[in-house]
Length: 166
Image (cartoon, rainbow, N blue to C red; front, top):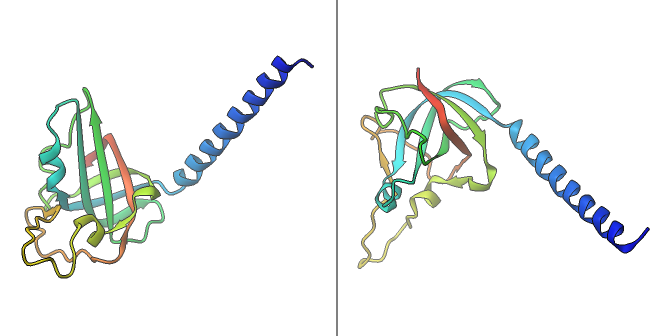
């Protein structure tokens, strides 16, 4: 064999390994996909303030799980990241009202798991000169929901069109 063929086969081999590991990782995370019925109890109010263009929309929600339809997630609360690009529709009206139940179809993303305390970016004893605004704001009617501060909130991705009223 000549050198060009060896290099070509080496590249093909590297690409095959990279693709198979990516497919395997997606397959493993795919086993953890989740379909639930729940209520949005908090949302990241600072992300909305930082979005100055209409080309993309991002929201981070905390959802209280009322009913599991598919999946093995045991946590009573999950973190849900939503991103709409271009012509994708944003979240439906009424999603920030905790009285309304929604059916979520979610894709697991373990890379963004975090405790609520970490997401809030708060400290136990802030400096007396420090002004702090919490990232997350309770939705209407959920002010009394006690989201555990130090428990890990599993992270899921919500694709446009994967949310509907219950």
